[in-house]
Length: 508
Image (cartoon, rainbow, N blue to C red; front, side, top):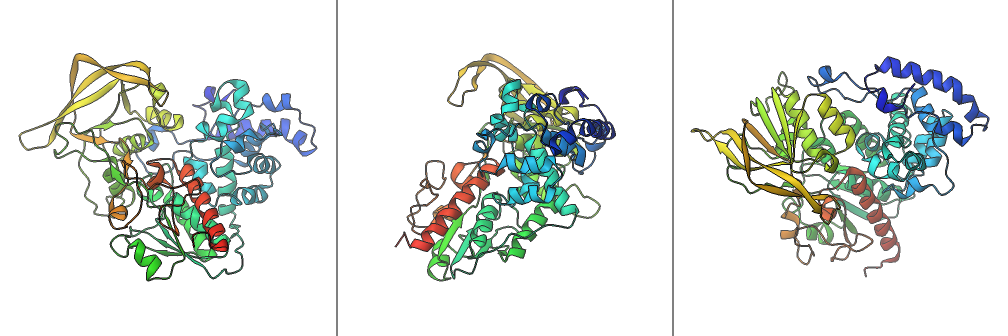
């Protein structure tokens, strides 16, 4: 079997057969402890089996099919078990990666997933959507030796396998909860930060209630990330595990309207509060024509499609625009999600317009590759300057300016520079800006003495304490739009601070 980049067109069956052959070759060496590092380095990275691009572009079924047991074990055998474990440093929630990978290598899948769950109760989710290539895989010695983090040990794919194995086997183990402390903690928001904080707080023995504004919990994992990338039944199963631990989830509960922060602390008897309400207000480009019919923020477009299931036209009656030629503006994961969703909702053409090059795109490489395979058309070094409408006020085209790359900016990426007087027109009927989000102002406008920065994000200290005693915050409401795993790290840090402060009364 050749390296992953050379087998992307192999069928899932061919990939599984190759993995079985490799497991027969290398497996016994791991079992008796005789497999040398040079042998481990000779094992190619296991490619992820996936649906055929032509088929998946027409359905909502998950694109990546997941490893077989042999693939997971062979991939785990690639780990060098470095004494310094640099991969852990790249993990925002500090999972003991070498330990869970080593257990997976010898088929101890339950023990493997139990190690992960010491730090994260969302392994099936993180294994699917976390940008491992820019976090734990970036620090992996195997990838550094290859000078390519994409050739590191595929940590997330192994994590996904053991988590899926546990669920499929019906052996999901609910984490142990400490004795009741008598403290009540409220958690605002049920996205990654809120769920992670709730899990750690409950494990510490506190009574925990989650307040969710929508009618379903899960935050961005439910309304933002599409079914074909993160099946909703997986999110629901993870939340069900929290409820089995004793966490209460209250939906249709909007903090700032249903109750305020002061109400929860002063009237409802909560001893502490964690705010993990995310960043849900979309950014626009502030160019002419953004008020035309046919312009949708990626937030609205994906919420209609995911939370409200607009793709299931036979069973739901969610209004969705009848698009034929779609332009998605941006180069992040949300842009990829919106573009790929538009294709699945029936658009004949989908164009992604990004003012830098593919190299600078913040989206995961895997997601860009999948979009490319599905027929999404990319237009690099371009940026719209105007959206044009017809006589009925509907989008008919966009005016685009060509760009070139200049010197690096503060992010380290080369700065896009407009080329003077170099414009062209592109005929489209739908425009979806996917340019990031800012925080919803409701909580800060209804909460006195809550410090926020110029972008409206809540200001916290190194332990995620806010300017109000007993109130903590984390995730996108603090970081701005970030990743699932970074939000989880924020939730963990805040939960640890809350437990420490509750035990000492530090805020008094």
